[in-house]
Image 1 (cartoon, rainbow, N blue to C red):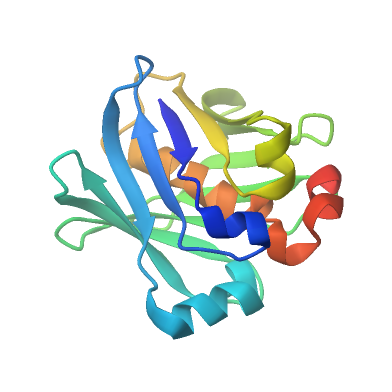
Image 2: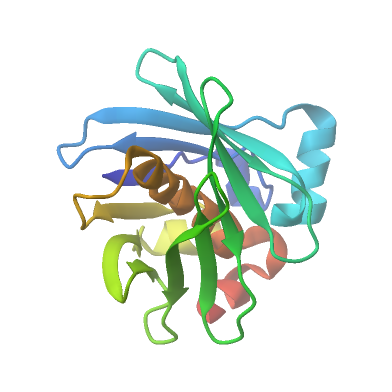
Length: 202
């Protein structure tokens, strides 16, 4: 499936807006929608000043606009994480950033806190995120080129989400999907953190 960030005109002028996404199948049909829920003036100011360091929630909806699950990002100075909960509040798992210098690294934990998938984006493939278990790639998230204008002047990112292992549980598949948005927010929201310089560095 594909995760496509919805373009906001204000991004052309350097403002961070509420992140919104369309999740589509390989034929371009809408499956889900996701949107950051922090609204109002305080939410706007927090996005401009703190970027991904702030606390926020991302809610997922189906095509009928009914809630499916929600990602909760608490404030943390270190080892930032996204906690994923189902529609009824059940913990599905967490995605937690790991310390690394030359790679983008995080772990996927199940509801019991066990590491079920490990991700480390290689230095030479910084736009590809393999989800590994037992030395084998079970899923993959890859950032796709959005065009020169989008890459330089907006945060409009596109990601391909692939499930390579049929034995992945529903919770694990949901966590991989949520990880695509987590990756975007952690590593590719560049307007407030150095603009084109950070984009080239990423």
